[in-house]
Image 1 (cartoon, rainbow, N blue to C red):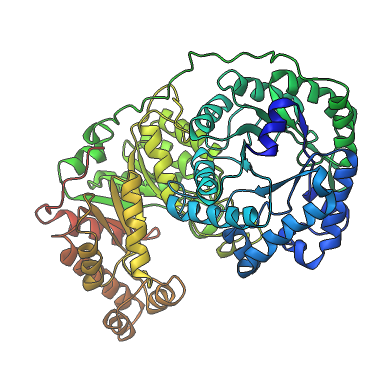
Image 2 (image 1 turned 45 degrees about the horizontal axis):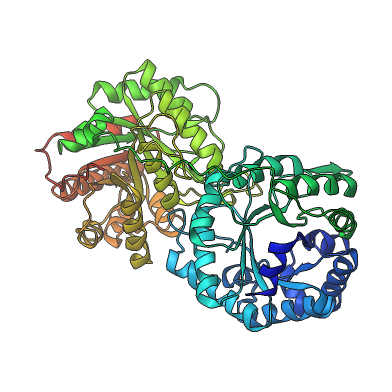
Length: 621
């Protein structure tokens, strides 16, 4: 049995407080790699540990929160992973000696793992295992997994730690004021999962102040007998003369330490904004009392996990979905939202296309990172005023996963049924290059999120009250120079729940055939992007700046056009030929014309003027 587990079962242990807050207060800029300071400024790091030890902390966390391969790589220190982690243990031990327990601190990878991101479960587990092995070998007494916002990632961290060593593991989630983690899991659900996965101590840290944390800790206490841990922030930060300051007093933190202990906490400390003075007050309270009976009792009849509902049948989700399920050849035309607040021109174009039999209007979401009217607003207006179905592009750039779920539930309530989910162009490509991008997830993670909604669940697997019935589309680029990566991502999107795919503009039948052959094993139909080039300059822009391959023969055709009108005619003829070449192998076409309505009508007539294509029946789930 470890010393840590022996002591935490017998009494309350006091942990230290924030490392980042202290480093910042001593002049270290937040853009530095704090973990690397173990090597470049060891005396500074050791000095902070000493301040906490002198304040009465009995558990000192190493300065290794971000010392995993993925986070270190962002700063160019991946090759120093072992050196940084070993130094972290050494400095904490030197500061506290044998009278403290050294906890090897491990935080999230800093990138989304599957199903929201590109890092596989096995890759995440291997990264956590590697860090845990070094911390354990360097002499840590226990491991602390902290500030995790999703259950899948902390599950892999816990598994990696268990595979690496036999040290006790404290597993701490971070929740918001609503008591839910970033993935929507409630504090109680987090506790149940961590208990089942075998964490020695279960708890919460960061994000919220003492009041909100107490409510979540009590929810955890009702579903597990494991010792609990509580390390809240010193309240929410307040902006004071340009600086974010945490204003919760040490006395207040100590008062809440008493509530944490009566709820079942056996490890108490602090996170962002806490200082040695906060820990001194907490330690003074702990010394003055002995833990009594837990005030919050475990409820044995714990609620079971939410059951996913079967998604609505594909054909029932929208008119477009019904045509897709019936294997009818589809026609979509893209209309950009206006720059201003008047959509009259776009509504008139949509009405014209609707009269000529288009199946749906496809509306991009902030294309080229530009500020335009909300495409969701335009989609609702087109459906209500024109009667044509809209296909809503939805990108990851501008929203976190909380607002994504809110947006999508609202869109469904307003009658939006057809989606194309994309990662989105970075802000540097648009009119506001300094705007902040979110990118909580990419298109793969967003597809999983929407698929969950179709099953009646939020991202954390919790019921949302009623399920959605979205037709889930995704994008693909047959001309991606990294072709193998494109196919890999396509496979992930299908696995996440995609119903169909729309490609980037294609100008080369051979390139499209190569892509279709590579994805032949997947059961979702493909809609080919068709773009009638208007000039040689536009073709060169597509080829050289947007990296959309344009064959030399097409460039020569435009180059030898007699005048601008002849070039436009050549571009239109090339697009019509592309429709003819692709028709036998795709489920439909998406026509992009940037307001050139006559060209759109010509392509629409070409697309609808031949017998329907045959293609693989899409999956129903």
